[in-house]
Image (cartoon, rainbow, N blue to C red):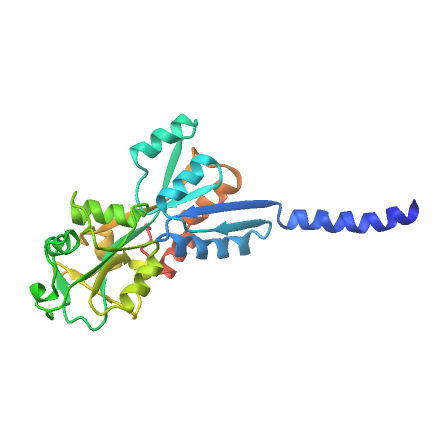
Length: 270
């Protein structure tokens, strides 16, 4: 028996230490727009809190909010406000959706770097995406068809684009629908005659961002709302957060958390 105890005690001690090391798990799911913010924030947060393990995924704003309501995630990231039907669905399950604004974003039209057009209007964007404008020639470009690339309907980015640009119109039937912001960038970088839109944090040298109405997307133009397709970014919790969830939300709103927002090229709210 003594030998058994002498073996068991170190093993039990090891499991106890492991349990302390990762005593708490925090799951975050939702918007692919907010994904870079959540991923970087999770890295910094875990360094500060080694006893907490944060798992981050990006299944889309709508899916993230659904996961929160269903209890399969602790925090839902969203690139738009929760819809009335989502709030109602939550209440049916006795869940109160609490939104926390953690950053600002500008949705930016993007094209292949070889496209000679630099500036476009909201009206022209609407007519491109609803199918009224079909050729780059109508915009002063080459006589080539415009390939429209759009986010799928579960995307918060799509819903904001639909509200602020399409204004009730539908995306043309032959548009290519992609599931994430990263996929949008890859698609545009490989197609010389395509156009799409992404959050400001996803802009890189593989694509060209367009001015809208003579205005460039920047932290200043997003903050003062002079950029026409600006929006807040959210993290949703079940009611007022507490414990580990509250600790993460507080971190996001802290000076250090807002520094993370700027580091991944989004716009801090402070």
